[in-house]
Image (cartoon, rainbow, N blue to C red; front, side, top):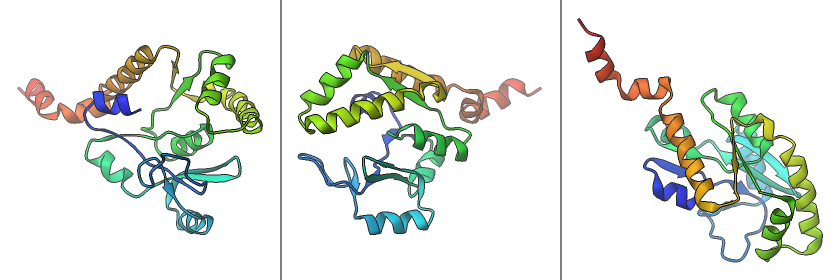
Amino acid sequence: MKALIASLDNVVVSVSHTTRPSRPGEVDGVNYHFVDEETFLKLRSEDGFFEWAEVFGNLYGTAKAGIDDQLARGIDVILEIDWQGARQIRAQRDDAVSLFILPPSTATLRQRLTTRGQDNDEVIEKRMLAAKAELAHYNEADFLVLNDVFERALEDLRSIVRACRLKQGKQGKNLHNTLSDLLSD
């Protein structure tokens, strides 16, 4: 996502909250907001999340704070979430656009999980099973992106952002003065 953000203006990636411990190299507030379960549950009980889910025994959620403000200022916000979270977002926001990033094959997915060196074989097997279950929900997304060749996948992501920005509702607001001029007598 960093490459996408660097290549487009007015795009940010939200930073999710999680109760899982940080991995080597992860920075609080950059990769995730690492919180204890009590803090997470308190925020959830106060309706502080757009979406949340339990994954592999840890809680993850996208806080509402700041996102509405960014959207109101014309900044596109990308949420890196699973299908459960995407369902919750779509139920709340009719302007939400969802995309599903697919690995090119099961073998490639396994290789990617193995080479990142963060999980043991048992965890990788759990992640592979979870990925199959996740992939079964691809048809709920508005767009599908195959992550086989990085540059091509990145261009697909850029194209989706550009296309969404050209939708009549959003572009109509951006071109209000032009449209008023063109439609005036």
